[in-house]
Length: 259
Image (cartoon, rainbow, N blue to C red):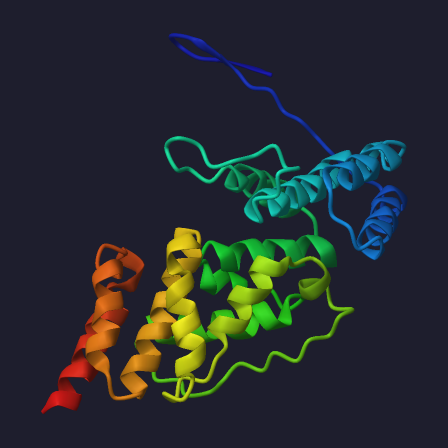
């Protein structure tokens, strides 16, 4: 389409993608088969793509799913993924995740919503993740972080009953499962062994996940009566604008403990 103006003309190109329900269902069926295969490899993803070629109107949806799985392989640093950390330390898997969300966010389907919830949680978009009710565990843990970052006391522990048939479980990976579990520990000062494990892992975890874990570790230390240990984590988080309110709240509570 060309729009004429007084000085110049501007050209716009529109792309319309309307997937029919049968093609979408066909892709979802092949996705179920991929998941039931219990082996996420480049070969398995490529086979999924080939087997869904006939569902022509749902290719945009299919490509979003495939890119998410390619990203999962890269995030787990699988040698099969073909994606590695670049010299500028930009995580290559993020490009895959971003493309997946861009595509899947346009579909009102359970699988699409679950994946968008998992990625939103990874990116610390808690207000978005907590609304993804098709990822119930993600929503519960995200609600905890939204409360903490809003400087709102919340002593509850997210319930993480694992339903192995739920989408947020079958679509996650070992790294996501580990982060979810750590982020749901009781913040009553009684999880020292787990927090020690968290702190040992921080140097080898993506910055987005390390942010979550430092908040959890700091809250644990405060509840355990060791706010100074928590302040060490605040030093690493001091430039995170999204945490400014929480950091101030933490310092206030730590100060009250010493008076």
